[in-house]
Image 1 (cartoon, rainbow, N blue to C red):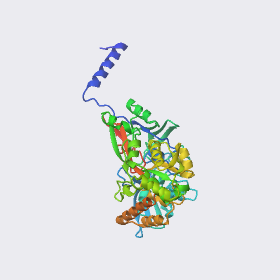
Image 2: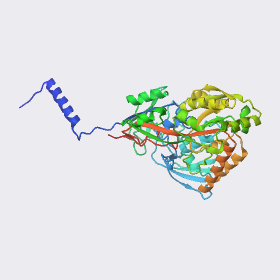
Image 3: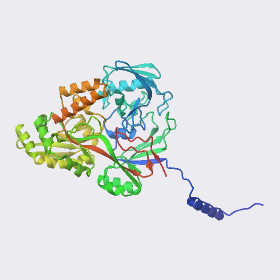
Image 4: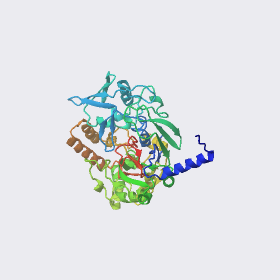
Length: 500
């Protein structure tokens, strides 16, 4: 017997079935495979080997681009595109065995020729790599065979494998390197899909990835500069979270909301009042020491960061075993500050500029520092800058007196030994310490030299060391695998997934 049903009856039956399925206790729903994360800053471009902005690595590191080694969530160095290596007895030659079957997103094969191209490009005379000094100790790069690379250093470098894990050491291909700023082509588990300027950057799962497949099919980085807008987007569900949440005053409220996970960890971000050591009065160490005595670090943490941050007295992460607690070197002492200024020939103080990049810690902190320095006669003209202007005027052009910025690169105290770096600090004694550190491989020896380097830059008051930037992450409570700490500039999505 044939039974027929009207369209209305079929529709009602379908609705009833759907309702019944929805209330069944064992009914399973597929976990989400899309993700939208809010970010504060839009990167100037997407090539981590050609720019200093942390926002580049925060999107591309481990997602689009990969290196011979990789730094994980705990700061450990892992083999990556190089599956293993051997080090010569004299510590100067590294022979890397590369993974087989790795391809770039455009289908071209990754091999030792690409690795050689990447390292030679980073260290070449015309290199635009922001961390070019990391590669200056490479004497030669040799292709032994398609899956074997030999790198010879001019002298042993105990940090070499760690340095290869930076985004600046990402592997790129000669066929696509020139276009990586706008359309990045890497070997990672995500491919670049779309960049809507001022709004979002979209990544898609790489179906041809050589390693373990990621669990996200799509990841969107939504650019939201305003802290109030960031909170509104989070509460409305327009974004699933912020790896670094700017509206710190709202953390207590979000912690009490079961919809969210609030996870406050640490970063490698030393937040400093950077001073141009060759600019007028700031060329005198007594003036820089006076400024160091005049600034209330804890008040800046409370006022600019709502109490979230750790005071520091040198350019080094407090969570590192070699950290030296030098916060007490320049206690808040306005009388000492005025005496040092008078000794340097500025009893009435002087005028200077304070050029501030966009982050809230800089803009809020700048007002507080200007107030502190006014008490000892230093009048600051505050000049707000966008990142492109800051990179051009301050970082490259060195046309500034003071600025506030977080240096989020890992283990980067070596920048104080670079010729013509934007601090314009020039100390043969410091360079000697760094040369010894670079050659040392024994851990105890390296830690002693790191301690000496910290003490020297603090004694010379190169900058005012304010606080270690915290990583305040807020995201949907069902989202798992987000990094708590930031041992490197990264929003590594390779382990991120949704749970019911």
